[in-house]
Image (cartoon, rainbow, N blue to C red):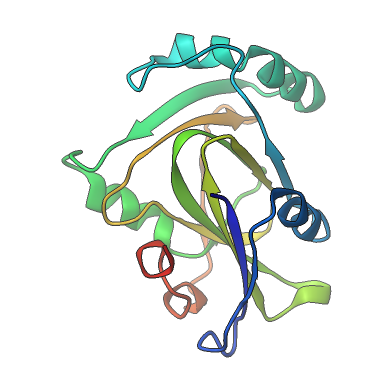
Amino acid sequence: MSELRIFAAAQPALEPMVVRDHALIAQQLAAIGVRFEFWQANRPLSPDADQDEVLAAYADDVARLNAEYGFKSVDVVSLRADHAQKEAMRAKFLSEHTHDDFEVRFFVDGQGMFYLHISGHTAGKVYAVLCTQGDLISVPSGVTHWFDMGEQPGFKCIRFFTVPEGWVGHFTGSGVDRSIPSLDELV
């Protein structure tokens, strides 16, 4: 089940605000410029569905987003707990960073946690968004964030890119990413 927790960045031990209703999560995230949608496949998918099967099952939604944003590439990535490089892959995304491009992910299955550290009118807050099957999240360019797939990752995502080089992170070194509970601690 999708979930949003809003932490005070300076006092992460304080009880966060928790939202579990998908429409209310989308509303909270829209207020900070983050898109959050729920999609359903147009056909059943097996757990081992390949990229072509996944993209076909979500063809209408993928085409709608492509028309809106002009993505240069779309692919499907999957990571399971038995992957030999899971620790290194997890570590790559756990440090707070930004992108010059926005980051768009759709969860075909499994789960992952996006942490959004937003400046401006919500300065001092970290939005921890648990994304699960059917969730699409779009993090705007320049938003400081990090991603936790957990110690035992299990997810399959559609990734959307508008730049040919794909994921390029600019790390902040702020340390806030180490003060907020991890996915495993929250779930």
